[in-house]
Length: 96
Image: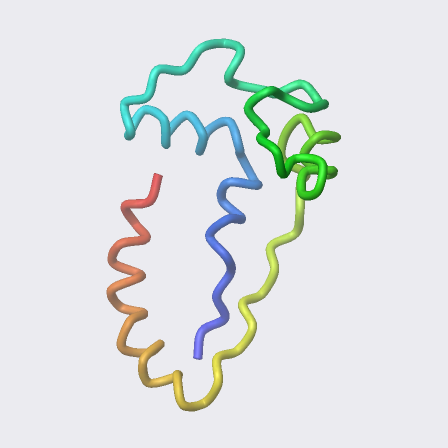
C-alpha cells in the first residue's frame, strides 16, 4: 500500500499558482481585489458568519501547513482503493 498525501498540499504549497490556474481553467474574470482578502467581516458572509466564520474573519489567506497523511481505510475498502488508484494516478498528472 502506497502512502498518499492530500492533494490540498499542492494548493497550500503555492496558493497563488493554483488559484490562478483554477480561475484560468474556469474562465473566471479575476480582478486585483480578488487576489487577497483583508481580514474582517464581509457583506457576502451571510447570516451564519458570526457562528461559523471566526477563523475566516481573522484570515487573509492560506496558512502554511504540513501535509497530513491520509488515514488508513478499513480493511473491507482496500480492494476498492486498489482498483481506484490507477485511475486516480492517471488523472492526477493532469491536475492544475
